[in-house]
Amino acid sequence: MPAFLRSRPAQVLSIVLLFQIAAFYAMPRSEAVPLVRPFEEFPREVAGWKMLAEFPIEEEVQALLKADATLNRVYQDPQSGAALNFFVAYFRSQRAGATTHSPRVCLPGSGWETRDARLLSVTLPAGGVVQVNRWLVRRDTQRSVVLYWFQTSRRVVASEYWNKFYLMLDSIRYRRSDAAFVRIVSPVDENAETAAEEAAVRMLQAFFEPLRSFLPQ
Image (tube, rainbow, N blue to C red; front, side, top):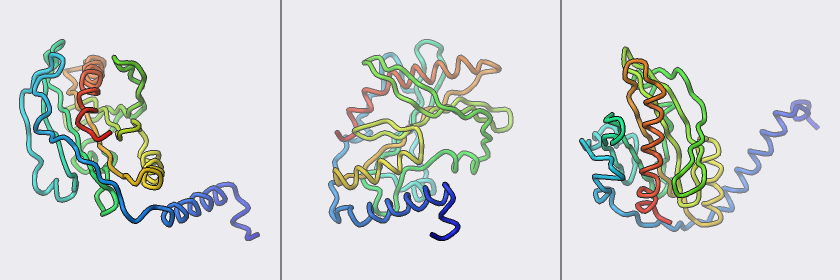
């Protein structure tokens, strides 16, 4: 056995590479691409959250994002009155170069600095718990709490790496690679970081089921 394969990291990496090769050749050449309800029909009021504004995706951003459908709106929290951004990018297929993007790349590129990145578990009103990414970001004097996750018809995933892993499994088993990237941005007013996080969690809880009805099952 070569010397470099005697180390544990090299062995794990070799197994991962072999799995990726096997998965590539096991993937069916045809793919089931489901239809999605148009996001234009997404309600302008959800559990008391009222839409304040809707912003189309700029052409330059869409050229990089390559999403098949996007939703980019600002809603007002009925409890605090705060205005939060709700963004969804849906990809019908991720085989042609279009894939879900991570804020780990786009936020720093836009001048945002991450101060606190961790996982957050959120209990859903209908039952169950989802785990999402929770970030505190800052640019100049602006601060925001950001929640984001990757969502398919079968699961919610916080990790970019597990998202890719499940993508391979779904492509093999179900001939599907559709997925959505979902992000909530809650501005921090003065030092009220906790209040901003609580508002973001309330939005996730209120919007989770309505969004599911717009994603293919």
